Length: 361
Image (tube, rainbow, N blue to C red; front, side, top):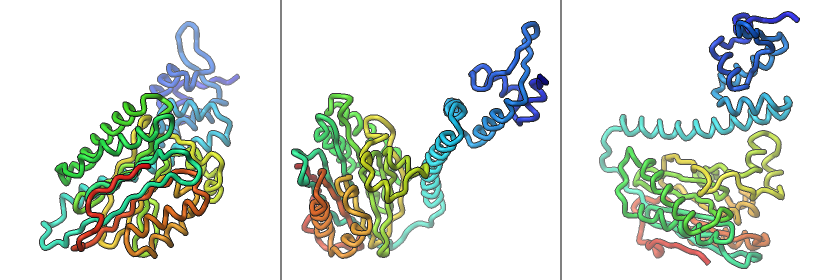
C-alpha cells in the first residue's frame, strides 16, 4: 500500500499536522500505521474522505465529541445529525442576534421624549379539560409578567406552580434596560430550583414560557412545548420553538408540520425547566400587539389557523382566553389547557382584570 506521511496527508485533507496528532489522541482519526521505532504516523489514501469530513465539520464549529458521533454513522444518519446540529446553531444565533440588536438600539437611540406609554391588558385562565382527572397547568398574568407552566409527573402541578411563583417578584423588581436578560436568567434559575424542590423526584418537572414587560420591550423565556404567539397586523407568528422529539424531526426534514401535528409522540419532551437551560431573548413591541401564551393542551388540538381567527375576532383578552379554552375542549379536551392573552395598548382605560391573575385548578 502507498502510505501518506502526516505532512502529505495534512496537505491533502487541509488539516494541520497538529490537528491530526490531536485527533489521533482523541481516537477520532487514527493513523493507518505508526512506525514502531520512530513513532511517525502514516495514513492510507482511503482515510482522506473521513479526514475531509472532519475538516468540514470543524469549519462548521461542531464540537469534537459530536464529530465523533457523525463519523460513526452511515451517510443518511450522518446527514440528519448535521441538519439537527445546524438547526441548533441557527436557534442560538437568533438569540444572540436579538441581543446584539437590543444593545445597538440602547447605545445609539436618541433620548426619548413624549413617548406614548404602553401597558399590558391581560387575562389568564386554566382549565382541566375533559379527560384528565387533575390540572397540572399554571397560568399567570400581571402588569409585567405573563407565564404558563405545564407540569408533568407525580407532582407536576406543584412543580409548575412553584416555577411561576418564583418569577412573580419580577412584577416589582427594578429592570435595568441593559441587564434585563441577566435579571431574567437569574430569576429562571431560581424558578428551576423551586420546581425541582417542589417536584421532589426526577420523574417530575415542568415546561415554562413567560414574557416580562420592561416598559419598552418584552423579554422572553421558554423551555418545553408550551408556546408563545404574537398577533400583529392580522398575522399570527409563533415566537417560541418547541423542545420536543417531533419538532427535532421537523427541523431535520424528516417530518412535515402537518405530520407533526398528528404524531403520536408529539408531547415527548427533549428539554424541561429542571433538565436544561431555556431560550432567552428580547423582542420589540408595538401598540396593538396581542400575545398568547398557552400550554400544549391548546396547540396540540387547535390548528394555528383557528387560533389566529379566534384571537383576531375576540374584542379583548378575556373573551380571547375563554374562546381558546372552549375551542380546545370542543376538540375533545384531551389535556389540561391554559391560556394567557395580553394586549399592548397606549393610554389604556381602567381594566376590570387589572390585578394579577393566577389560575390553577
